[in-house]
Length: 231
Ligand SMILES: *Cc1c(COP(=O)(O)O)cnc(C)c1O
Image (cartoon, rainbow, N blue to C red):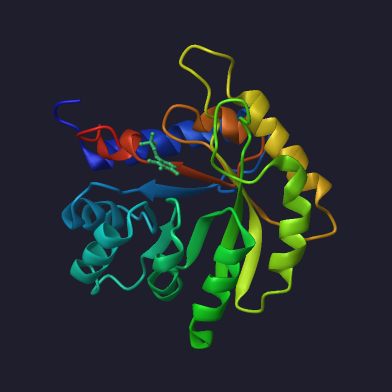
């Protein structure tokens, strides 16, 4: 991407978010932007924060912890853990993050619940749903979501906020929009469990996600520029 400015990246993402919200006849400001800062140095996060960006998403625990350490003076950052969760990593995730998007089994939820320092208040969590079952292994099967949601609802140190999904289809195949719609319908079907979050949409598809009801989008390269390597 050559000379990519974080300020321009943020401005263009916000402009496109507003256009998608207008097209969907949804109020502006009704989607939160999580800036996915994996592989980016602390300096880039600090810069984005300076432009008003508050939510940051990280995938790899060790990398995230060292950046949090370098940024500990920036107290208002809200950290989201968006990567796969290994059970031996739950303690630090419970202690250092405000949100976890990728809950895919009860055991992980229970560990996070047990390890969350009560003084921090409940950890916000989303269940990751496998919305591309034919092509992907990650996430809970749609027909298993209701049972897991009911179990998480019983855990006092977690607050179940909603569902997260990543459409994964081979390049050039159908639009992600149907997968986003399916996730929204699944959330609606979980009533009466009160969920306020649909975490869906990344750099290449966040506008479709907003048209289908996303309340939180996770965007990396459109803000920070292309990442080195295949991550
Ligand atoms: C990397 C990543 C993103 C952001 O990806 P971009 O294509 O750079 O926007 C969002 N969500 C998850 C779970 C990711 O791993």
